[in-house]
Image (cartoon, rainbow, N blue to C red; front, side, top):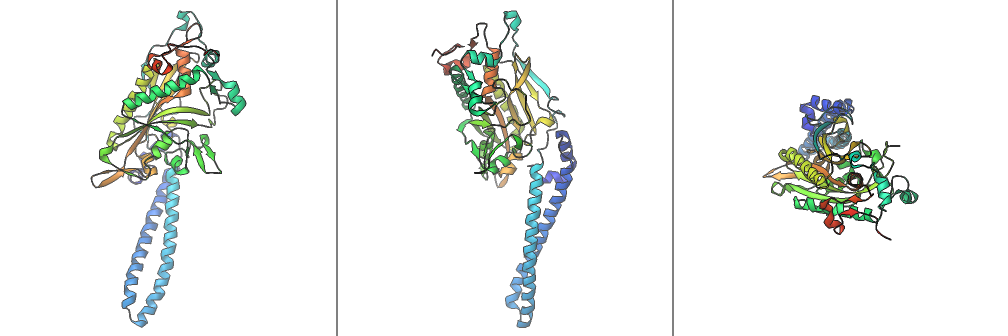
Length: 425
């Protein structure tokens, strides 16, 4: 959540951020009103409590005649204090619920607009000219099926649409990608983590996934657990309700987990193959830093993602995501989009988001610098979303005979294989 002091001191900035996101600007004024009620009801409660305490000190010293009058007044004060406390609690909850609906303040450099209004910052690698090489590229599903690597028919039979099996070299390729990604992250100083896939509501709400993103979240109502759509959630909640000493920052974790997404609102979109699915595995980077380090850490996360995609020898571009496509928690987000030959366009493979103190306030995570404690900043960056990375590797590294060249960075994790070919049965 945002800092309420910012809301009080500069409401126009918050309104401008809401407007840029395409969100409800009236929410800002509703929150200002609720905050004023919360503060005034708190002052009223404090005044009555102080009066009650003062009266309690007078009663033992009063004469019998005065005591009766004071006791009557004390009874009335007790009722007034109880009513004031109820009003304060109600006002607190109302303000909290409105505050939870408000997105993070958008960074001033973020391009304004919707999904297609991003700015291209960089382009890397060379797009292959398959025509010059003398063959027409196959899409990832055709390649995956011919290699015995992907089985979507049985995935649909067992679990429904947008589910799949990775088999043979497909399964080996996933394990190679995960191990190589974790190796790079560990080399960069991240602590590897295997995280829970089920979390409590507070963890999901605290990271900002129960607002505009709630429609894509799987909820197990009987147990009141949520299936995570990214290990960002358990990594962000790892230090929930903790105070971290400043000299321990930055803290960096690389989480591996299964991820689950409903993909609501994408009917008919990317239905072929494994590009957009309901369940997938992912390696996620997560950083806790002091606020003044957040922007520099954001750039570092992006550099690690660029290093990863470059090691996979994939052509890609880096975009500055527009305001309307940020997600509630991010103040700014960079995506790396890999070239997909059969689609003739770049598609998102990784993202790096700066959430400033937004998640830390919601999850009550602070850091101590001397005697002062304050919210720290959290950032996250996808290093390897496995199915989409497999899509990009198969299509970009395919050869005329239907085999797929293995980038050198993955070969040690694939038993030295230089090409992917069907495993003999």
